[in-house]
Image (tube, rainbow, N blue to C red; front, side, top):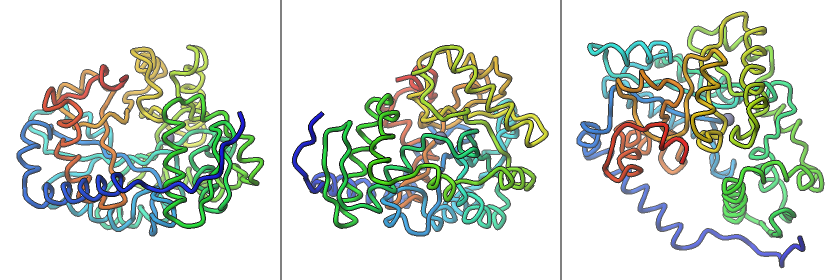
Length: 361
Ligand SMILES: [Zn+2]
């Protein structure tokens, strides 16, 4: 494909306004107590929160990750609103116990060093446990961490050509870098086969994924040490972190069981909990949840927004999970998510139970 003229990407005025209005709306809702009304129907008995990387400076990281101060505010809010922060095992027990107190579960995907360096001290302060889902290839450093490659590409270079997309960007400042990165991320999310086309782009720009992963992710010794910490449990996240819906049956099975075996051999214990890479793009229907069960897992989380209800005890392989990252104000965003606001919006005020049907759309 012939690259087009070089352009400087900008966030449109409409996008900026939408984001401001959204942030204001979240703050008003979370501060006004309106979330309590939403929670009556959509709050359920508990919620699983999803984080990835943590950062002290989200703008420098091109609007990626959870600001560590927001994480601290989220934990404080959960405690203040009378929720216990529990493990996945305890969450599953509570779903079947009508007398159980309301709860939240913390989950971190992919195995970033910041989970230990930044988040763990806050978890210790609040005595809050978390599950870290780790793909094998993150530890072996040969994962196709295209999202980290793109972030590094936009952060470290001003002239960027994404050949498979047919674009050439000039990004001399943070605003244009953030705007450009968003465009390319959205392009990949439109079609996950594109995530496997970016290798030559990184090579041409001198971006080495293995080095980036080595700096960003925990290593094997760090993973084993983390799992021995009383507040941390390592969970499974496939071997190579590919969108499972693109793979045939044998490869999906190998992605799940290979990672489970890898983790269990190193941690010397059963690894019963699993997260689908990317959530919905990994779910092509009932196949992946069935294979997660057959692989011997006891739970599998999606990225479908929603809270946990007792009925989810019967569908432990498509558990909804609420994103908790929003760099404008992660605490207000998560307070609304924990009340079930995003499930209410996604279902247009309909069924509060996020189900397999939604997980695959
Ligand atoms: Zn992941």
